[in-house]
Length: 317
Image 1 (tube, rainbow, N blue to C red):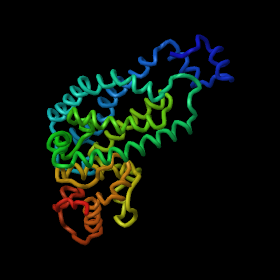
Image 2 (image 1 turned 45 degrees about the vertical axis):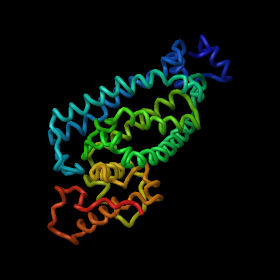
Image 3 (image 1 turned 30 degrees about the vertical axis):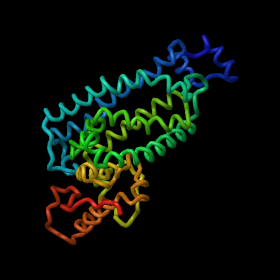
């Protein structure tokens, strides 16, 4: 709850007139408790999990608009009942794990210094904090994800997430309850290291989940020309990618290989896999695809256009 009762008091406290955004924030939050504002995350996550995946899920179910050629694994088709089961399981986990976790984690958010008062952060401050959050989450998620692909971690926990070898947007948060709790740690570390405003925290939680859904969409990113990011990407052009569009193919390969995968553990960027040598299988497959597209092996059917070749995932040395 803001410590001001009027706009004039708020302006006097920060030593200047309020911006339009700050006036809107004051009008909305002045009489609301910080706990109530924090709990907005529950509503945001519900809407994100329920709405963001829908366009590409509908495209996959009805095979409409010529989108099939952009599907990374076009021969894998989920029925409407299978798709709804995935969403239902995610909602069960949301209401019994994610939601309650949000409700009880407020003291830790206050402890690290997430604020709700004025002034609001500048656009650059928000951008730089979000960048730190993504980098910290990506690095810590890499090592936790890699641990979950050990024998114990995979068999006891992570194999639930890999039930979908050709993921869809709804499957992004589909996981064992323990994995949901464990992977909450990387998401919390960035804000703990660089605490910001509640609005920044909202944006961080929302953007991270949207990115995860996008990565699990099962579709290549389509350029305005009608081609895909992958078609413009040479295996020699770069060692790692910062493109979210490329991350779709990158993480889809990880699901395709499944429990045997020792490749592509990164959640957002791919530099950790490149540095630690855990993207060899993917780069090998990508190189083969490039050769196929250059006509080296003309006439070979590659799963209806996907990038998969029947070779084993290359483990890191």
